[in-house]
Amino acid sequence: FQHLARFLMLLFGPLFVVFINSFYELVPPGKKVLVRLGIFFSLAFAILSSLHYFVQLSMVRMNFLRGATEGLEHFVQANPYSLSTSIDMLAWTLFLGVSSAFMAPAFSGDRIQLVIRYAFMGNAISCLMAGIGYMFKIDIMTFFFINIGVGGALLTIAIASSMLFKNLGGLQFD
Image (cartoon, rainbow, N blue to C red; front, side, top):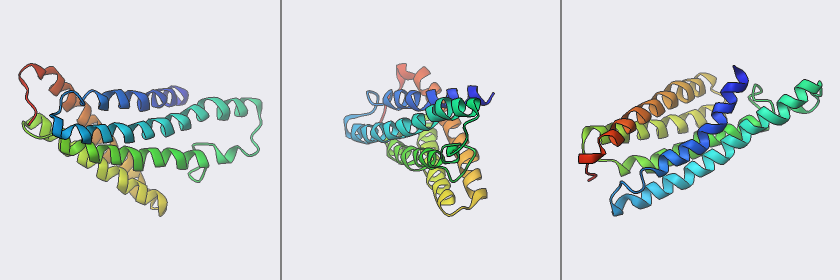
């Protein structure tokens, strides 16, 4: 399932940009700049993350299949000190975190919007904490915040957003 998981992660970045962009028309004019900034940082996240997973699925996999492993340690995802892993962590910790930090204040009002707001804030904090953990080699901190924090926050954002979009008929943004 390793290649399937990487393929799905390759798709996640661009789909996240589309998802974030879907909020732009919904927010009032005063909050559009926040969503626009969220979109810009989500683009940086998508580009870097997609680059990482494409390298894993193409160059790394093809070289392993050929038995050509010399120099590959700088690109293998399993090496926490590789260039490729560092690029992916930059995407997930800095750019996804900053995107989420800009998205959070765009939501206010009813309960669903507040859940989305707090989930985006939780995601921003989790991303940035995971980045600190990664930079200072605090593995348990990185593991907890990138897997539990980001995973839980993104799941919450997805579920609450689907409820928001379902109820769009009578919903008004503040």
